[in-house]
Image 1: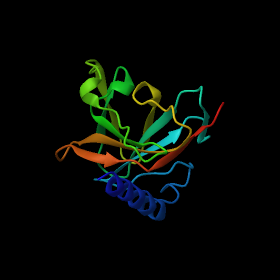
Image 2 (image 1 turned 60 degrees about the vertical axis):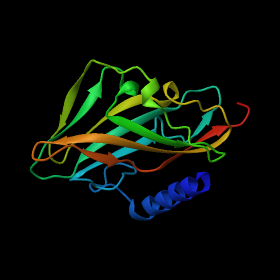
Image 3 (image 1 turned 180 degrees about the horizontal axis):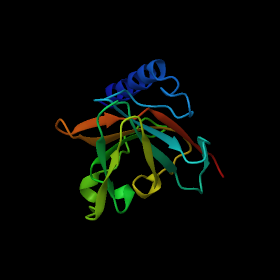
Image 4 (image 1 turned 180 degrees about the vertical axis):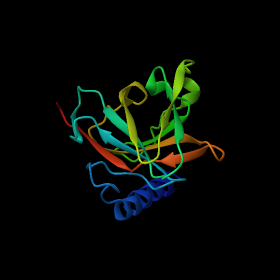
Length: 172
């Protein structure tokens, strides 16, 4: 089962790597996940460096983008963004172990609000993924985010981010 899961994530990563490319408007260097109902999400390491010292937290920047020309969508933003129950994470350790956060064990943040993203616009939020996962093994972690998106004209859907590789530097 583990080998199959690792193979699936590797295939997902390679597939996204082939189809991703530059942003539609060409104004930034963020990688974006596949379009889902005219929305996309992106995750990147805050500061742009994918190598992090073992003593530092894994801080990410998650962006939401509307590809629509006529529809606004909403994303829930919890008061404490790490405890947002409309977002989930797939985190694979350097050893291939699934260390994804178990949201059944994480306190639900009961305050927050919906952020509306107008057509053609982008918005984002910073978060500390180390609050949810232990990055205590040196090496490269594979990370993917999944976020519930609300469209005014249809049911909520799940948008999937670009795959992100973060390396925890050994002995630093």
